Length: 107
Image (cartoon, rainbow, N blue to C red; front, side):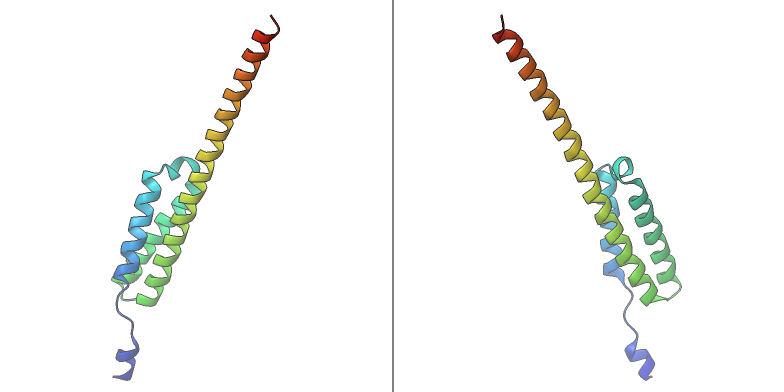
């Protein structure tokens, strides 16, 4: 009876958080910019769901939390890659404008 009291409830909130993080990462194009991290998050989420269905709540909780962390990393890496691409595009635009300005002023 004492062992039953020490058992934690199923990690439904952790699984929901992991699902939401994976969904957000997918919506933010992490497949393109952070595919390894997103794949790891999806795999971890799947393993967490299996663990929970088998009654291994501690393992499910850990796997769900790791999946959330992987998905958040994928989101951050994706945002970083997008920002770097945007910065490169803006630098190209500035370079082109400078070249036009310098060409026009030398006439």
